[in-house]
Length: 235
Image (tube, rainbow, N blue to C red; front, side, top):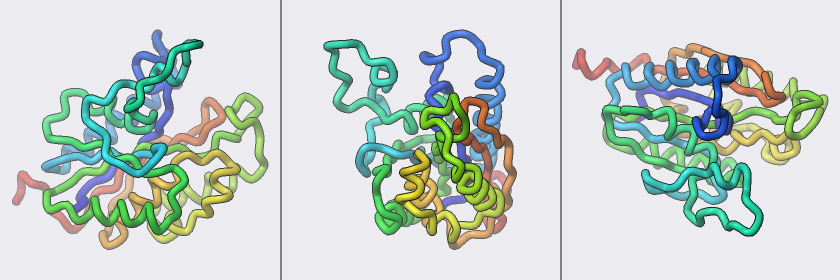
């Protein structure tokens, strides 16, 4: 059963090997993401599942190679065949010194809502007290320097997602339009829909920890803590 959730961005800049030196905007984002993961661990979980968009729906090995080579490819050099997608690499990077077992689950970025939901239901059926770390981004079309330049529809779509995350509105997340999300370069759609299916039968206390678009991509950090499950220390 899912008892705690951390939503974090899948921003490649959160990977230590990408940024190099300290970037203030990245450090604020990284601090918020780490605090969110810590809140999930403090809920007394027995295990963590890291969930993020991937080329296809599958489980990745814990020691899969970093995707850094694919972010800045070298001519003539082929990337590792089993390299982690960026979302799962970011999630893994936030698990430094994690005290509980963890698993990396990729959901196909193009999966329809029903297929994404099926993965979420599978994760929710795990018998242990499970914490879910969901690495997902909103639109990448929020400014002239954004990866997808400007799309005037992006702010409204991101506001809808932000409101759904802030209210734990799983129905709104499951209803996200896949075609529109693809046009707006909303990379987190399938992961959020899997999360929504995993979490839809639980009452949640939500804390939004970060909401901004410093690089033209909508980043949000939030925690959902289940109100109906006591912490392990108190059980």
